[in-house]
Image (cartoon, rainbow over all chains, first blue to last red):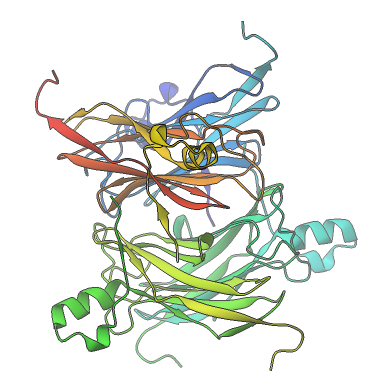
Length: 131
Length: 131
Length: 131
Length: 131
């Protein structure tokens, strides 16, 4: 069954192989903590923070998803070769319009090593002018 | 974070609302137990075994996936209205070619109620002529 | 820009290389001519009728789509390796529920040779009992 | 069959309804003209330049694709409600790594009005330091 690898605090790992393996696959959510109600809100997802992932036909990051709690908002599907068949950190900027507060989680899928989950991020909604 | 609802033995549930809720979302794998090595093998996935799911713009089955252990083999994305906007059991027949034994799991995604997992099914490989 | 290769009557081609090239990529719609209103209707799509397509990391059939006129009903995304990395005719059975008559077209996408269109098929709707 | 609407020079249209209809659906590629070989290159796609598109269950922008000539690089699938069910210009930033020069085209898909194509954009590759 499809296991979802949970994010580890890789900075505390003293096993370099495991650190590499986890960092290479784990998506990271990069965005502000507050969103303005009814306006487009940018959410960058990047796979890996220190290590880069292979882009080969039998081993590549096939998709990146952005979830709000149990709801899938957007997904980017990536074809092999898009990163020039060289190691890279796949990345996408999504734009969503929140109605209310969100709890965001990203998933990335490696065709060889399965599904990986980001640390979740709470987004608060600012009404009227953002401060 | 995206929770994956695990399959229940709904026939033993005495709570009709819960039984309906789980059956309506849970994908079922329908296929033979044995596959012939190197030949196309048909795997039917049907969402729900007794209850039908809504097909409305804000509430529909958005995709059905077939996994072999931690590897995603195929996915069918369904647009709202494909089931005529009436309750139905979304269904797809996938065809995969196994090299070795597989442990299949299906996932279905409801745009309102999240990800649901099937009971997994072990597929043995028959070499040469299937008996 | 993404060109869509149109289906040829390959049986009339006397150029074997071109015949192979076109047949190998062109999806074929296999279904009945009549559908019963409001009931699930099975539509098989198979890529190729005589020739098989490669399943390699840099060259595979990445998706099969079923359109009703200008509306995308369902799409199956296929990951490389799903056909055991051997030549095969990728195939899927979709199930849709028609409200009114449909004009179906399938598209298949080869990661090396682009988008290919099937011959379109008109589906008439039978009300009440199908005859 | 799925028609692909070609981009018009809407600024020259004197028919406001047609201008609205075309602008509302046509994806626009926003990126630099030059990319550095082997480095991540950002390509923003935005649907609409003046008008916003509905985000309703039976009428929304379902996906945005980025093509390099006849090759699909990346696709973002958008679920209804992601833009808070209000008119908006769906948008995504893709990151690709070019090996050689590219000719980019974006496609967007409206669940009611079909496939729409952007003006294509030629990307030249700069070797070594970008100037």
